[in-house]
Image (tube, rainbow, N blue to C red; front, side):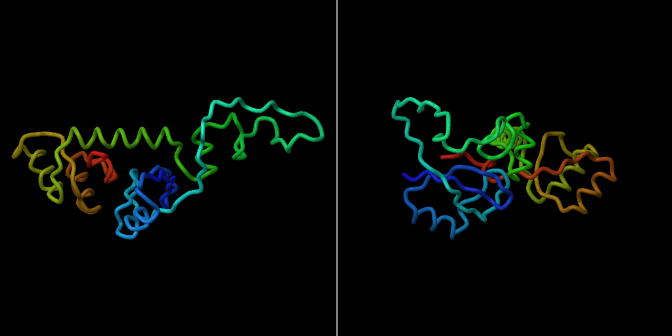
Length: 172
């Protein structure tokens, strides 16, 4: 089993598990590998190194002329100050912090679990509910920008929300 660090064009970083490198390349070529946050299929592998926890202790920090170059106090290996907020670090690296990515995916899954997908009939169904022709319930679906603006002009509250494909299905 190969565990790969992957990244989409929007700099969302995630992990993928594949039987082999060939399996990853085949799935990527067929568009089966998608970002779980934005559903982007333009996925690239990131450099990653295995971490082996063999129970060894951290080496003692050397001091003096023979010590390796040290980063300035307060800086992390990435060059972002240790006191930087996660959003500042994300801005520097162009990516959301992993905890924020995970929270977004969890929220998206909750939206999917507690709404009915009406697909391309979203605008029509929202109108029917608004005008009392159908029972009110939580729905989601697809609408063009023009349809969404028309709904808002009619006083029908809608919120555009990009739901990643990973939120719509169970992970295996």
